[in-house]
Image 1: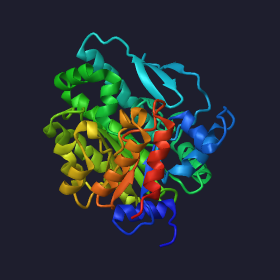
Image 2 (image 1 turned 180 degrees about the horizontal axis):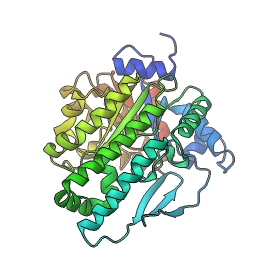
Image 3 (image 1 turned 135 degrees about the vertical axis):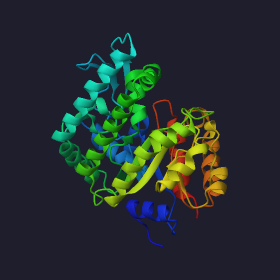
Length: 371
């Protein structure tokens, strides 16, 4: 077999067809690694070029395309009194307005719902309807601007495929904005408003999908669902099946209508609800987190035809392990998967604490593995 393009390799992996080598998929949030792969020191002027060059060296698929062109953190306070801290590669909600009762929360949520539908009507990015990490769309005002910039970066990546800005599940957005305590008080006291909020957040994502989707640019996408902790589900299986999975199905169905393969980032312990996401049509599930009790061998035994991705531990192994341990983990993951339907990458991202040599060892081992 001749050398496949990144897109061809990924499609063949998802279909379970013959491939020339194992595909790689990750987030690059480590300046040392970018500099190592690109062979130059990152500056504000060349950061985008070097990130594209670095990604092209080691990845078939990249997500969270965040450019290290401004290393100064910044604080942003929105008109509702929510305050965020942004760094080049991530973001955090650091302060919420004071809510003295669940009625105060309901009032704020109703304002959010109005603002979300106003943005939908205008095809505008809605900053209160998204999770405040670096998902690529945060620097733009309209859906069309995001698509135009995505097209430009895709061409610059020169073959490496970039995922569209992620669909983050509505409950994750709601619990970040109002925290778990505030959200569940709202859910208990004002369930109709709480469900309307989840619907509004989902409708926003659906509007973005319809405006953005173009499978000729990239035929892959991802839904992102905060499923569990390291030892159990965040919410009961009943809640997930009633309130989370049906809303995610709407997104999956719409992406597939536009001709996309849909990958599912199910964060944390996930065994009890994997079947639910398979049933709504996802084509791949990641990450495979050993520290959450999810290992490749068991996954392949239970789901022999489902594609699995990102099985290399970025919490302990990639930052603190040895290169030989990383290489062994990559080989074991590929072999436990039967050498098929697996995409290698870190369990979340190549964050700043990851050892550069270990990251390189992971990619080299996967790309050089003899099928």
